[in-house]
Length: 462
Image (cartoon, rainbow, N blue to C red; front, side):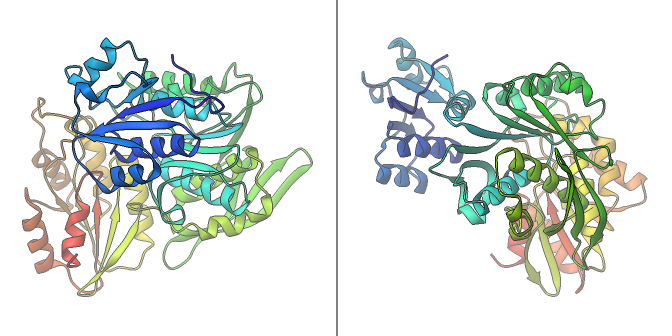
């Protein structure tokens, strides 16, 4: 595979340069002195920004965009093998990298590279690690899967040897990475359109852990079922966190304020003994207590000053679409959350139960047909934690409905549990229903990885 060396900048061409992730990687290379060109189907604010930084951007993907001075081409899964620009690259014998492979090659050039993985919590934990390293003055370069307010987006260009990235297991993307510190938050069934089963997923995470060098560090949640199977045979240092006093990092004296924001005593085991400090969160839910412990353990391994941990964690107020307070309309609070897996929904609704409200309305948009079918009963269990559920049509994402599943099937499961449930195909009907039935003091949560957040924004008049 083609290897990038920051000491020897070359010319890199991006097919799909206007994507939020691709544009971020292009910006990192520009900051390191690489020449960058790229193409996309339309001009956007991101392509204009890259042009101001010195990139050459072509609108439209054509064979003539490929010039003889290109050293390597980067592409995404959205590029068709029949694309004429792609075919021109192959005909010219230019090396190619997938987006994840490029991210791995960038990571290879940092002495301290933190990669945060897990079925749930990656974006939040990556953001928490970022907050700690920033407070510690370590000036990291960061790429994260959500919009983090303190870095003004999903990318930060630092000027140090520290790099922080979210590491997604889908299509085994994270197996292209070169971390020196890896975090595994949890391992559950998901992405079953790619993985065969939970054992296939566990095997992938084990390979990810095996990417670490012998002088690296794996931070792993020891609540993961048979976590020792993941760590067995590793040459690197293994640091555990979790709910047990046997963990290297664990919490005690957990409490919540009136808005569901957690506080706890962090226990940190070191070579010189056990250290404790009180941690106060500005985000809600028990799950974020454990996300924060993982972030602290990773930041400790990255060399962050422990004195900044409390203030950094308290300063973190969340990323977009993670229990995000959107506003209030007619005395009804509106919260949005990206949760799209039953475990995530349970964690989100558990947090919501500690948040002031009368009746909790959940507007849920299932994400992909395969996930909806695979977890139908689990979705029904999780959603039944709400007082009332309003379902929308399934968000197809990358799929076609070849398995004949619908939100109507999920409604039947929820009805059988005795939970109030309604189903509308169109957002306009959802909004009209909520305007008629939600009362002052109630809370509406829009939940899902698609575009269901628009319901809340429309109710707020945005």
